[in-house]
Length: 169
Image 1 (cartoon, rainbow, N blue to C red):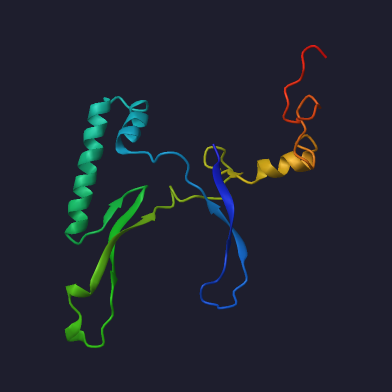
Image 2 (image 1 turned 90 degrees about the vertical axis):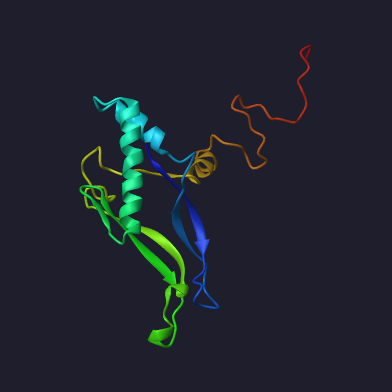
């Protein structure tokens, strides 16, 4: 399975006359994987039942939330560390700095080295492959098997003029 990406042009927002530069942007496809889907996947590699795994995952989320809201970080070995951060407004005087200056609270995740993507991995099960979403368009025009300049070529070599052929002809 490969991680799809597309090419996105972006200007540097800090510069008024910024030049557009293209960057690969990873694309998430399909629906996200929820706790039920994770539990179903885990069931095949465990002696636990689907209900047991779902219960454990649900309890994990609740316990993590409680720990985070208690001001602690959550370190799951071989996975990573979850912690909270805040988006705030700065003020000039220390006395004016109150909880009213907190505008949003975010959950941060710092993956452990065992789950962090490694582009140079030599192990087949850890190697990340990428899928260029623009490549199929290029292959058709570069390979000579796609449409001609008019876009009318069919695989059998016949043109498509929009009419159904006469079977009597």
